[in-house]
Image 1 (cartoon, one colour):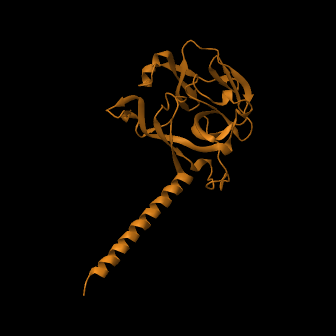
Image 2: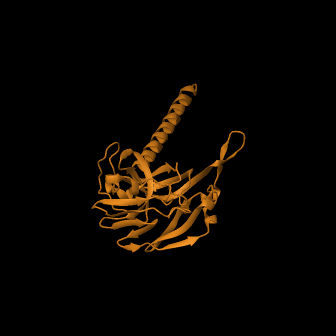
Image 3: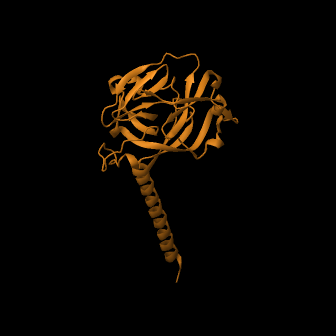
Length: 241
């Protein structure tokens, strides 16, 4: 008796197993992408030096509510982010655009900026100047002042352009269920300072909290004949703070 029918049956079973495995993998990836974690690429320098152009990041979605796919409906209520968190959110003026910024104002906070210094509830946020060499491969870094900005038990880098001190905002009080955001590159960021009536971001617009840089490419420094961007190996799987 020929074993060809048996081989055909085995081949069909193997093909079915491959297809089933692929379907399961796709479903798991979609579930993770929809409910748990999402990937984003940083296209601008508004968060330098925390995030650089070419950084690829993961954002943790679970804390801010589970959204039903392809709708604005949530199965769980979104939680307000913490002060100092770096978050991904849909822009108030255009929900089709996602922004990555740092949360500086929470509901009830009085936010003010005088000569570039952030003031929260009538208290100026502490700053400490450090060497701009920390900025690494950021172009023209000598034109910037790099400082630590401290929120209670959290601290992070912020940059200011040298010789430009006339930046003011407010005061304004953050309404309930909204928050106020700034970019860490304070002189090159489109954020709550410039959005007028939509300056405050609704908590419903939150997409996730930026947690890790999983890869990073320097597009200003290309390698090889095909112009492949240089890999910033020191930033791979570095935590975002």
